[in-house]
Amino acid sequence: MARMEFDGAKASAAYEPIEFAGTEGCQGPWAVYNRLIDGIPEGIAVRGYCLGTHWSYVEADSGMGVAWTASGGQKRMYKGDLRGRELREVAQLAKSWCFEEATLGIAALNAWYAQRDKLDPLGARYDEPIELPDGTRRKMDAFELHADQMDGKNVVMVGHFPHPERLVERGAHLTILERRVRDALDTPDPACEYVIPDADLVFYTGVTLINKTAPRLLELAKNAHVVMVGPSVVMSPTLFDFGVDMLAGSVVADPEKTRFAIHNGAGQFFGEALSMLYLEKPE
Image (cartoon, rainbow, N blue to C red; front, side):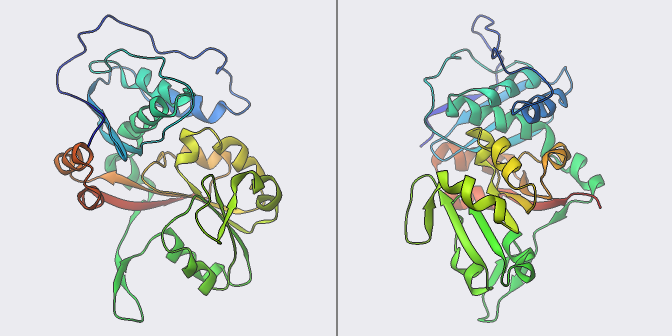
């Protein structure tokens, strides 16, 4: 079930500015967030949003964006209604140390960037199902796209993605960095300082943008091929300037189904409502 939902009407609450002290500047770890926010033009209004149990969305005049609902961090500081607010201002929440607020900020960024009319001219490619040797069919995800590059390579997965054993089957020397260690394949995420500098290929979950680990993780991976994976990835080529080589994210193909899935915690419908795609850094 969704924890919060606000749809349609403009904000009725008194205006409360969204701003975060000490996050300015074009250098340092805030640079990527400021560049992404600055890329959103003024005059685009937020029309609805939902902070769901598993996934969240922000819907604006430019379209709908989604993000994984992260929890933890500071207590919520901003308690105003976001409907009718400028999308560019709501995207400032991406810089919040309350990870629920930051979730909405990242979804707001994708309400601008994760739109086909912006991504298709950049050469975006969309998932196509592939048939596996056992006869089953699976979407050609970011891991399958890089399968031929894994044999004998040091591969780091930040976040426990589904079926990590397939990377080992491809010959990868795999390390999974996970905040909540689940099984024998996982290593506590503070090991990032030790293993990522020696990696050949790194897959980062888009949630690293929400919890603010992305800037440092990208610094550590300066010698690796870096792929950011998942619906929380902000689909902006700005990330190429910070060391990312491929964005493997999504666009909302069916807004109505997305709303239903997030309001009801229906994961299957959520997956069906999105189109997964890839955007590569130009040569």
